[in-house]
Length: 159
Image (cartoon, rainbow, N blue to C red; front, side, top):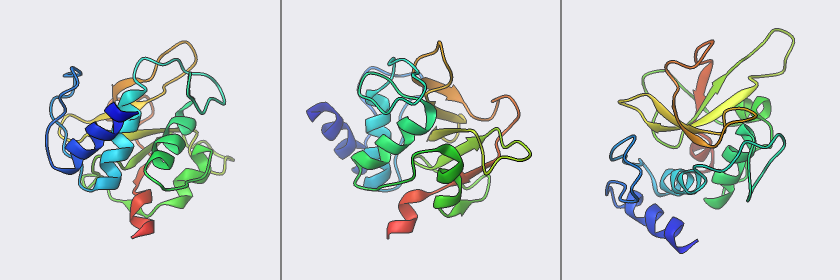
């Protein structure tokens, strides 16, 4: 936990990540809350996708996003479809680290079925618990099958 808090403080101070995960290079969080969200999610890298999982041993996509925001003191809904309607919308191209990115909005559903945390905007990367059989990882949101449905910024709701 101390490592997560130290990384969150580094992000909040505008310092690049120094935890050995260089797949995305330095990432700067726009707020202290976004820094905590990202630090929590990064600390979960490598943990397995578990359907319905909210940690600490594994996560599904919305369980990871919910717990990352909870670590920053913000309660968001449990499921991706409800998370989509919770935060203010962010236009594509204006997303920032810590925002949520959504996918898989099918006809007849109440919202998107998949969510990740924007991590590295210039490279189009997110932190995500992708699917059964995979681990929490850094993955492209620009190349995700079906494309991005939208972005939200849950922490802006609490300003």
